[in-house]
Image 1 (cartoon, rainbow, N blue to C red):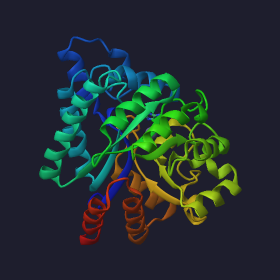
Image 2 (cartoon, rainbow, N blue to C red):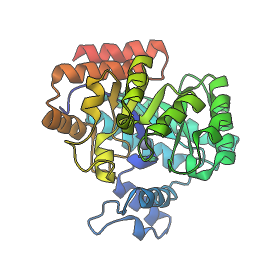
Image 3 (cartoon, protein in one colour):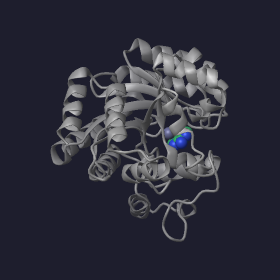
Image 4 (cartoon, rainbow, N blue to C red):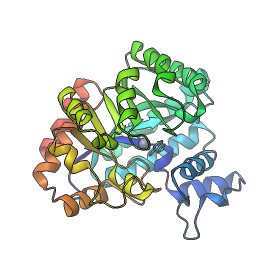
Amino acid sequence: MREMPKVELHLHLEGAAPPGFIRDLAKKKSMDISGVFAEDGSYAYRDFWHFLQVYEAATATLKTPEDYHRLTLAVLEESAAHGVVYGETFLSPDFCGGRDVGAWREYLHAIREAAEIAEKRDGIILRGIVTCIRHFGPEKARETALCAAETAGDWLVGFGIAGDEKAGKPKDFAYSFDMAREAGLRLTAHAGEWGGPESVRDALDDLRVERIGHGVRAIEDLALVDRLAEDGVVLEVCPGSNVVLGVYPNWKSHPIETLRERGVTVTVSTDDPPFFHTTMTREYEMLNRTFGWDDEIFADLARASAEAAFCDDETRARVIKRLEQT
Ligand code: ADE
Ligand code: ZN
């Protein structure tokens, strides 16, 4: 399972930071973030909304482009060790330079440089998706979209929205998504994780996204499931994240298998792996154990994920070649 070549489309860069990495940074900067960790050194939070607070407290230790450079190297080393050959990561100008375009360029440059080093070192290819944070509100999202539009290109390939799905409505963010689309960015939105089918519908209708982060609660409305299948909307499903955060009580009750059987294009990612005690290998192992997914299904999954990637076609061809080699 570990060696199988994988494609991961839904990973928050700060959310992938190993706890030890954040603890060391805090110590170096004399920051007290003890509330972030449990006694055993792992991240500690009570529920999703507390998770968002802990996430932001941990992220506060990342203060310079150099910190993000080192973080990117650490995260990609871990991803590559679990067979990921191509990944897309969410980046937030909110955390990287406070939505100032000039500062954001410096963070992006540092992250991209680290990705190039990791590609040479581990063979893993990375691309970036800027995300605005829903609970920071539509005004800040516009500034974020401007950062994204100014740096859109062959590496920064997408725009999205994360954060508290219960804060505001997708429509409030339509201006930002329109700006990103104008700049040539491909679009995705977190929806159908804490909101129901109507949240997924609103993201499709009001933000005109082609992928949905999570989207799993579409299962509560089979007409919507048919629409996703017919329109080829891709779901970035993160089952381990959903189970740990309590969207579903256990793996057996997770809808990923039903969605797949009903013809929806599903992909598999870790979301924020150390927060959810997971890796891409563990996601694969649990899918095999719970639903009997075999090598053929995993090969189809990786291929479909490569097809759904926001990179250019030359990069996609390189990724597909890597998938076929093994
Ligand atoms: N930010 C990091 N992880 C997230 C998740 N699972 N949902 C929404 N926002 C997030
Ligand atoms: Zn996410």
